[in-house]
Image 1: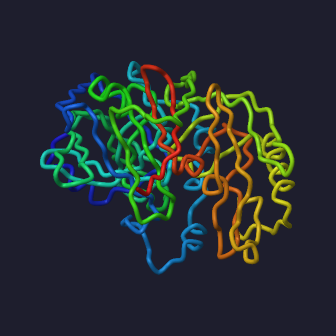
Image 2: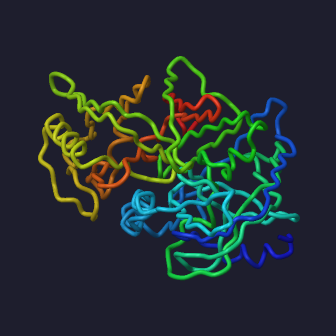
Length: 390
């Protein structure tokens, strides 16, 4: 694809909910160099509803922005559940790719000269791709092009790499503006991480600031998560390489007297592109009951569809529900209020977890204020408590 074609495409880019992309005959991936001598490189992540986002509407309240969010933005778990086919580099057939809409955007540039746009950084997707038109489905091609990642500050040079990406040509349907494409950070061979490979030691991490923060989050390539509080758990790759599967042994809730432990013993997907945490219905029911008992307040109906457990916090001063610990294999991740509840309206907070009949997902609200690191060679995910607004 020639650079001069890119501006016409990128001027009208919008995120889609599915794509049909025909694989190329060959792939050329040539990472030129990293910006720093030690192979570590950082880029900014901006939540779609952050004041830093171009999609931010200052005339809307946080609650109005939340209410306008489509279900696919709250959680793309349904897309994960329904996606029955994947892109296969060794197959000449066309395959369905489901982009997983989410909230944290990163700036990337394609072509020479560079054309910049914002794309969803998504561990639940593989391909780097962009489309154009107001749509929910696109048919297009895969190509190689120079991809650049601008650094967070003007003093550091940007990372430049020749990478595989998809570009839509024929669209149908309609969705809202959530981003201008997707940067896949998944486990498959087409993801940005796999394409950069040894240049970043097959490692990346992110530190997600709260959803409405006026401070950007950071995505780091090539570095380990370090510190005395780091815990690590192995991940598995499923039959369809894309997702990071973590073994969740149990969930515990701090009780009034003793913690309540809920056995789980199943794999969950950790996903930066899903907002809420999705749990099997039986597990969710037990967790909800444990929280209701521990909080000891009357619940109220949710003012927004899809949220289930809500409280009026007007007379409380500070709403302080108990911590919830996710016991992954070899790693306990303790979730605080910012990870478990979100303010839906003034004085109304609701549980940021839902029941699902589909795939269980550890969403990005649960990951706020953690440095979350991925090591594709060691096949492990690490967590460290952090203040991601610093």
